[in-house]
Length: 230
Image (cartoon, rainbow, N blue to C red):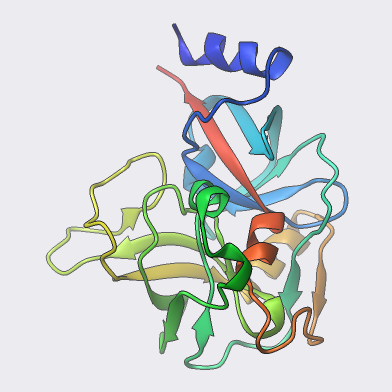
């Protein structure tokens, strides 16, 4: 069965039954707009958004190759939308980031405070993380649960170029920690402002220092499925 036919049945029929998503997005405002990495939605004939067992059609309303960012309009009403950090990120701190699919089955989600570490970088956020393919577009949540960035790619010694963490599905050793790059909050805000997409920013923490960030990430996140053009 063609992917488009299967997904059409899921949209109008029974709830989503576990089809793997190929990327992750984050609710960026109360209108249901989702921000993600642009390479997740490139060359999609149809784009589907997965949230809490529901599948809906998504529509790309803004994209930038320079930022590798995109915004997808959805008919969903988010319970919570991300709040971008106003201040630049510190050179190093523990953060939380994970793909939509992994968040759905994470057994210790209610107590997971962080699972990655920011490391000094000159441009985009750089961190040590064990995220797998499917994490492109995932939120990087810092202290207080503020959005510091969005996952875009991983790097590896000897690789000819960046390894995208989306539908390309390059093999990664299970549980291996790798260097991952992300678009920083400053780039996300510049991109959203250029395209007149509403967003919120703040210096005020949304979580206490010991509160788990994984539940917030799960609430903010959606899965993305690209029915690619032949």
